[in-house]
Length: 323
Image 1: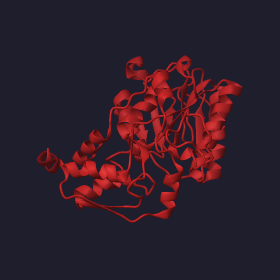
Image 2 (image 1 turned 180 degrees about the vertical axis):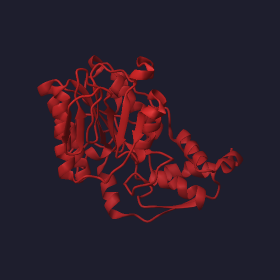
Image 3 (image 1 turned 45 degrees about the vertical axis):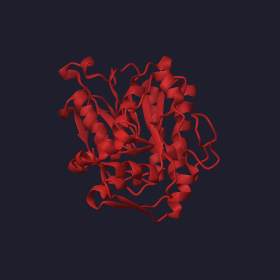
Image 4 (image 1 turned 120 degrees about the vertical axis):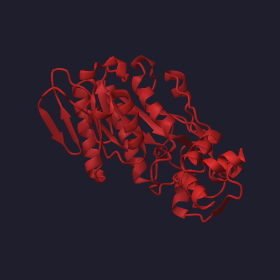
């Protein structure tokens, strides 16, 4: 996940820590972190709130992945392209990641900042209720990725109730975007299928045809992130929310692709490791609290998602012919 940091215009004492740096001044702005995004508790994201000279300057580290690039584009529209810097480094070890996280929590609590940490569908495990999966339930993930996310969720909630930290967190489903490369994750088949459909007219899937998982298009993901950060504190009944848009299986998305690319074929070569992970994750996210508390509403369902992804990858002519 990307790290979003705001570079302070005011000159202040700099405090450095593992995977974390921060600037302090009489009026601190957004802080920095290892996977989190910190801002003053009374901040507003709309660019109209800032004069040209006072717009935040944002540094996104580890930002060349699926979320970072899209988030950078969105923030550049808000704050200006010269005020957002995108960079990337090697992923830190789990030890460094966790101790970076704790330092960020301490700094955020000390300076009364708002802190956002992204979480994931992977924060649930085989003993969690799967259809639907509510915000509050047994989690117990079986991957280190999921364990680290639960750790971040619980530490953030502890700091909220113990020190009054304005901690906010979203559990994302599988995120689908057209302008990033697949990383081999369990839900990445739902990205790769569009690349292969346009290039080769066929796709080999590593999950079973009926494996249903929650999914979301990148534009909805980025908008949900900004909206939860802008929500009034008094509107939030939880610190960590599920957000969702749709749930589908490989055979369902393949049928939708077939409507636009006649002759498209999908075959299956099941990877047991990724299949076991998928079988332990939710079939459907219950995001009713997000919709009730801060008005979350997705824009992209499966038909819109498929049309957008195929058009992006250059199948406009095929899509037009099919329509």
